[in-house]
Image (cartoon, rainbow, N blue to C red):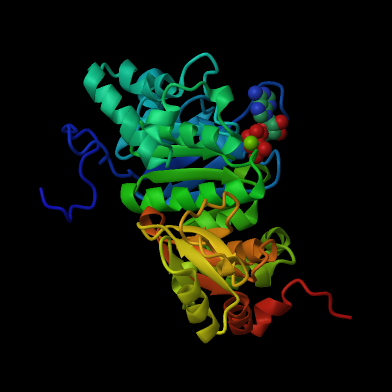
Length: 404
Ligand code: ADP
Ligand code: MG
């Protein structure tokens, strides 16, 4: 089998070195209906939709429209009243539900970790159910923690309550991916964390997906999150009726009806900033210094560039903190530099809207861009964001504006 095979079979035995390789499978909801007992109208009314293999499809819609019910029918936490659901070629409504759920990752708001189990034991749950041997489970736990940017030595033996909300959510993702399922279902997973952490978790999910190519069905009520993460977005009305199902670009350019327009709301212009990634715009160079450099020389270089601050990098090119020209007057300014825990930064897959948000809370009017392995890539300046806004077609800038 060659590297270029798009869809190796999901049940291909994993060897010990490459543990993560089951790519996504197509999901097909074929006329699926859910009627809860005693309810007048169906919670999900005859939904028909194809979710292509390896894509992130976002289900967006108002509260109560049937998003969670739709999602939970895919892993049979809820039994459909009628209709078929296929994952790959298999009708999951005929499969043993416990068996099914071991091959479908599921992430919910607040992560849903077991409080009395350590992080490692939480992640190991499904692999153990699948009878993996102990060495393979241990290796997998470490691999998963690394994948979600948590240091295994530090976090494996902690309990969920000893983690921040964002860290718990990362462990939730690690647990869902542990048995290498081809399909990942996520129900408002980042709804309970603060905006900055949410932005980071979104960026990490995109980075993961570049490596993993799972099929991800992601429920949110936040249209901006849908534009940022989705290859496609399904905008749902009550009863999970599909109002529009298309790429974010197509939905923003041509909303299918008033319901969709209402959902996009007045933020159409800013939404265009959500469509542009940091990696798509020219980055600027900040004045850069390294730990161990001569502060006077670093200051002189910054002045030559017309800058009042330098960004200090460690020996692995990771940004530590900004220093002002004034800070650099100290002879030992660059001999020992403590990392600034609150250094404002975005990643290459962040959106320009994230960059703008971050910039508005930063004291420098610029935001540092971090690439692979935490390396410094450059900075985004406010001018770049303004340029992008200028390029937005006037039509969508006017969308939602009240005309008198
Ligand atoms: P969403 O996730 O979009 O907010 P849900 O799928 O949770 O929507 O709910 C869809 C509809 O089904 C709502 O009217 C809700 O009240 C109803 N519903 C959800 N779960 C149940 C249940 N277990 N029993 C009865 N009605 C339910
Ligand atoms: Mg819900």
